[in-house]
Length: 341
Image 1 (cartoon, rainbow, N blue to C red):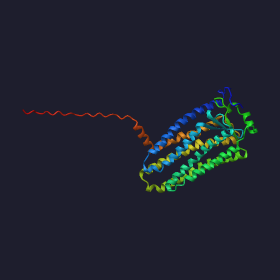
Image 2 (image 1 turned 135 degrees about the horizontal axis):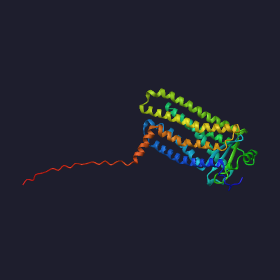
Image 3 (image 1 turned 60 degrees about the vertical axis):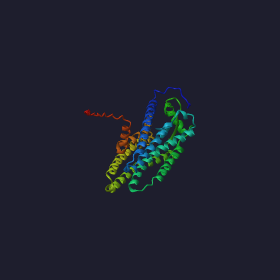
Image 4 (image 1 turned 60 degrees about the horizontal axis):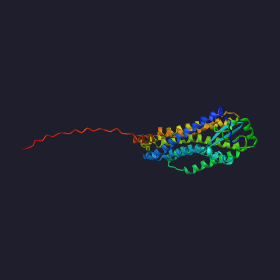
């Protein structure tokens, strides 16, 4: 496969898919960056004592989203199920086109590590809120555990990918349309197939299934524990605290539902298609858009559902707004004085 192809693939469906994908990711990055930085700034401004303890929940989500956003700036992982493989097409920035396959695989696995770690952080956010309610803060070691667990997955996945010249790669290059292997600017894409029926392939898929299931079940269980603890603490809460707790409930339910549609369903679809040998004809690329859209939805939901965040937005808006000038009319009183001669 040539490093650069002068052939025009603009009529290929995968070309149009990736063109739309590139545009969507650029827009998502710009808006997501602005919204998350704005939300981070808002959280720093909020001084309400009832909300101070819970600012960490939103800040943790913001930092996670920002790290994931910046990881998409230089490279993206596009997964496509084909012939019992999950083929990872790795699209690099034009400044990194010439790097070796080994370095490209390392960067690709690092991006996957960031995504899976941010996925696990959703569960940690639920746990952190529960810890605040019961005065039991043990978040640090769980963050490290989350990183180690997902680091294990990236190692297994990298060991399971087949290299150029292997029979698996030869079959993929022969049967997939040539347009799949080139970017829209004509440069060749790095790609790393994972045969899901190989030893490391099965381990990688099992790891992803366990991670996704634990996060989904864990969020549901933690929300139930939070709900029970709120009933215990309800009598000692101030009215403002009750309002914030109610707003956080809405936010966390929204985040959980968003995670299901943006992570659980797409991952399940890709894995099931790979297991049963279903070809999505490039549609698997769109799953990456769902992964990234979370970085837009999270800050929007926080601003909508959390009243202190909304109030800070209003303050910032009014600060820059021209206030109407009030015109005061001063009545002058003329006093006639008689001159005494």
